Each structure stands twice: as C-alpha cells, then as structure tokens.
Image (tube, rainbow, N blue to C red; front, side, top):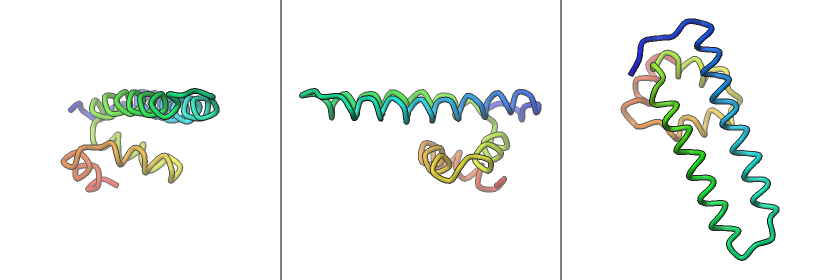
Length: 97
C-alpha cells in the first residue's frame, strides 16, 4: 500500500481506472457481437483478464485515493470497482468514504 497521492497523480489514477472500465465495456460489447462457437469462452476470458488488470491497479492505490475514485465514479462503475476490492481493503476504503 502506498501513501496518498498528489492531486495530479490522483487524477492520473482516476483516468486509468475509468479507461480500464471503458475498455472492458468496449471489448465485452465487441466479443458479444462476434459470431463464434467459443463466444462465451472468449467473453469470459476477456472479462477475467480485464478484471485482473483492474485489481492490480486498485491494489497499488492508497485507501484514501480509492475512496476518492469511488466517490467520483458513476454508480455502475463504483459497483465494479467495489466488487474487485479485497475485504480488508474495502473496509479501509469504507472508513474514508
């Protein structure tokens, strides 16, 4: 866990999280439109890969930074981010929201 970041670094982290969430939506939409025997498998693999990347980024953030990011995200994105936090980290963040 790191220390809280400067406002500029916090904006960079927010931008990265929102970019990852948007990328996940776009890729899932594209894979959903594919006509393939393995469509469900591809969707599941892409979904897991994107969530793993998001989890790694979230793990590097300070709880105060996570709290800020969660507060400014749209509700649907908040739920995705919240679901990817480990219980201990979620408890730390909850104290700061």
